[in-house]
Image 1 (tube, one colour):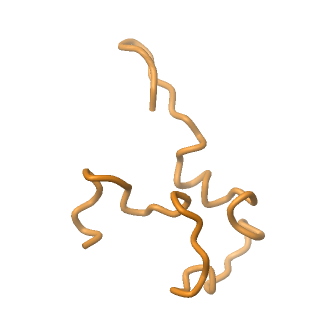
Image 2 (cartoon, rainbow, N blue to C red):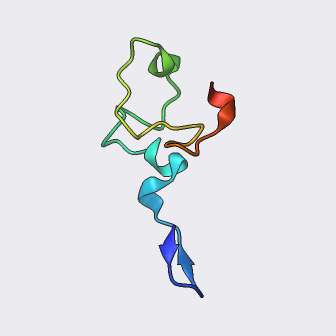
Length: 62
């Protein structure tokens, strides 16, 4: 999110929903493929972050 005091704009490029459906990062993103979540599967950095990122991320991920 970014904006001024009176208005906020949500940037779609940082939405987990949008990023998970971009063919830039995932091959055939709209098809369910359980192998995509395998520990051996490549995970492009900052494209899959179900618990958020950074120092204030979800405490439940640990």
